[in-house]
Length: 249
Image (cartoon, rainbow, N blue to C red; front, side):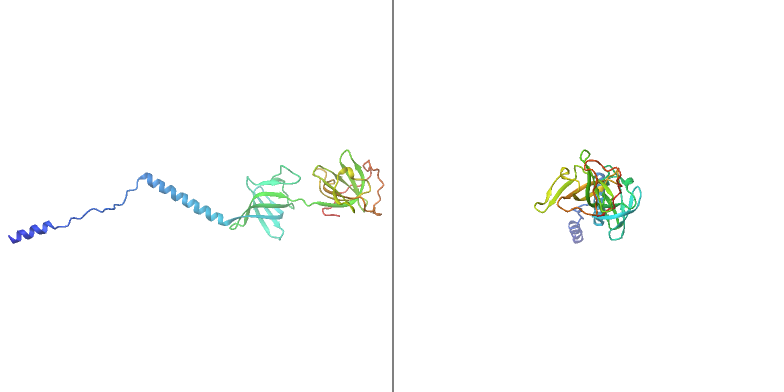
């Protein structure tokens, strides 16, 4: 009898294992695709962030030493060699060419470049390339004036004449002791006046200077080295017109 009771009690207090209260969820195929897309986006963001750390905006000025359809080599103002990459969205500009492109660039041309500099490749991806034209400076005496065409000749000490073209962009000034520097105009110029010219060679006629600035000095005494003996209304017929040297005075 005692053995029977013991067996019964042992069976009554037996512990039965219970299922886990937090089972691992089963990932559905649609959920897995979403996770994959999230991971791909995360990887792209990390990659682009790393690229941004290697790139910075930068501008340089230099002279072209070599040019191809997609790349320009420059010698900058510090005599360093710079590689400039060009793509389909690079924009070009020039004072003498409104529709220029990379095919219009030549060796020896001075340009300024603004773009994205890659610290890894040390290349500059150009966004803007501007041709820099150094202005021409001239001084002399007005030797003849063509009012109808908005042009006049100046005579220098070497007795050579240069044709000056006046355009709507030209700004004219007169300097006197009383009024100092005041705005003026083409109509105020007179034969014999001493003038200072800043301008650029004309695209089609390099020997002619398109004036950007004109300063007239009507009170300055005539230069004895410059002999003005040309009719004030007619252009000289035997004048030697020379292309001025950039920066010449």
